[in-house]
Length: 99
Image (cartoon, one colour):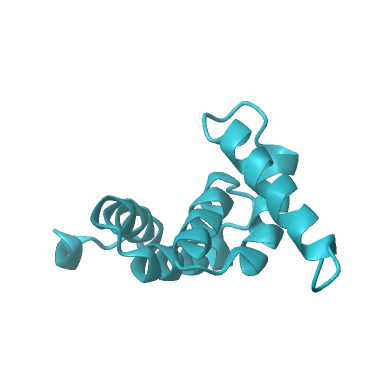
């Protein structure tokens, strides 16, 4: 199926979903990055990028895409979870080391 797809956006969307379903977080991240290069205002892709980064154990890198998603995606299903994660990660980065 993927080899027959001609539209890069559609291909990246399928790869993001496949990465999520297969728990292939690196694949989901790669597809989200590729998609966002062409579609910077497609805010749901920021959640996919953040989700992949969190699952790859890179929460500090997830803060930037979470900020974008939370700012623009109040009506999305993943908004409550994204807002919770953003609050958690931002508070963790402001704590002094050793406390």
